[in-house]
Image 1 (tube, rainbow, N blue to C red):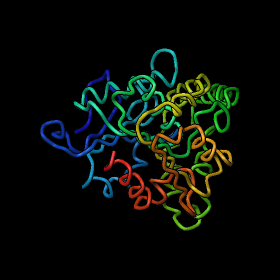
Image 2: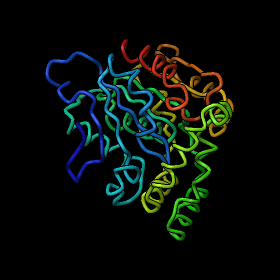
Image 3: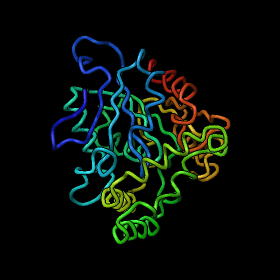
Length: 272
């Protein structure tokens, strides 16, 4: 089932009847900037047998361009995801966020912690800084609006894919480049402004009571070195925190290594 209401972001539900009798856990997938949820196409077959998957196009991106309204903020994006979950009849779910999707996942855990059973954070950081320095994102937003195309974020191809994927999977280079070219520049600019305004969420990560998976790529050049270890150190020893770094993998783990990423996700979610 996909969303049809105009007041909701686009979402896809792998099991729309899951709210009536199914005991399978729900896994929400939130994508990176400036991409969309088609970056999860390759991982879905590895997840579908074990979990109910709800993937969302974040406001301003993909098929949710018309949701880029009001003051840009990560909290507004998180509230949009909550509306999608309400529409899907999902009360509680594990939330997997990649990069910008990770910012939204942490915002969800802050807004409605009772609805988040587990956090699966990939290629992201709770701190304000690289790769989303506020001044840089505001400059990008202005350039997107001035040019009327997405050339200012074309570097998402090189930054998103690891060296190994770019060499061994050229189809992924074409895929990511196509998503960037097709994106709406004004929607992307709205998200860039939301990223410029985002708050530090390290206290949310430290205080989240459910299990956390920190899933990162060895070849990720977008997230500063040492980030995953620093994030793990925020978590008290009494809380479940799992760290996994996939070799020969860049920023977009589920796209580059779908089987390995799915295995890591399911190890946590099925037991959450």
